Length: 202
Image 1 (spheres, rainbow, N blue to C red):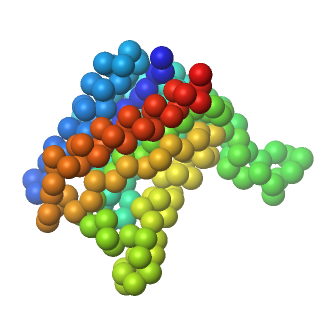
Image 2: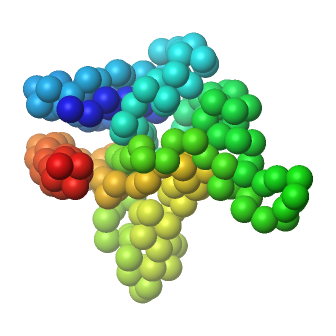
């Protein structure tokens, strides 16, 4: 069985209290625990201890990043979490600095991560409809995928040596929500992604 750390990175606002992200994080936790996995859940906006979070990353086989996309990135409180936790981690616990050496100071930037063999998965909620992505005719994203938009999050994980699992997106959650369908798709995504991961490990 795997050790899974779930990060709920939602920042509650009056117009968007974060209930869907809370539901998805809790649903993932319940699903994984029912399968016999060990699970730890951090709700970022509720507070955390930096060293505990570094330790959770070291403990986990898989880190699930659950968050709403705010202004094309993670919410400010989740960015603060990353700044605090990963800045401590870069000191030798999660990576050997930025990966460069005195012998080759211009080479291998970002390749000093110590979390090789661990996986991560992004699960994001968005106001944008799914149709806004992967379509060059759409003028805002101009053919970008969700993973293109979230490239900085992927690079953060790569910096520490983690390997990506397929991304999940719940789209159009403000103007045209369909929570029942989103939850069903999320369940299917978890079953497919973690089933395949278990088969690879076997």
